[in-house]
Length: 168
Image (cartoon, rainbow, N blue to C red):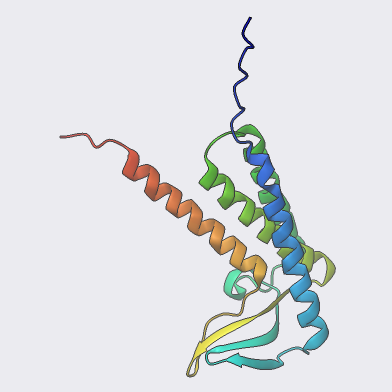
């Protein structure tokens, strides 16, 4: 008698949640140390064109909607997080690039939501500049959200290249 081979189950997207947890931990640790080391608007030059700075962002990206209440952003972050967790649960197998994109966005959204819930603002501390031009300050959570968005775009490009073209 031969033993029946068991098929290896496909990769489970939920296994990637450790990445979101890692993003949250690194984000909160860096914000803790910046919060303890710098006062508001204090800046430390690190290398040419790069400073550590302490800024408080009460708005969304690039300080848009900075008069909106923190609770609005917390509710939005929680809603997005629930949607991502639902997608990861229902699309458990395959779509690895999309799953990676979603867990980076999840980690970033929750990292910034923790700030809003505990501080009332998001602590931004990474600043790039050239001469008098300064890019908007950001943090680890923002980098994770941006990486996630970039991975989503990359996945869309890859999918569009895989689709067969139809001749007219």
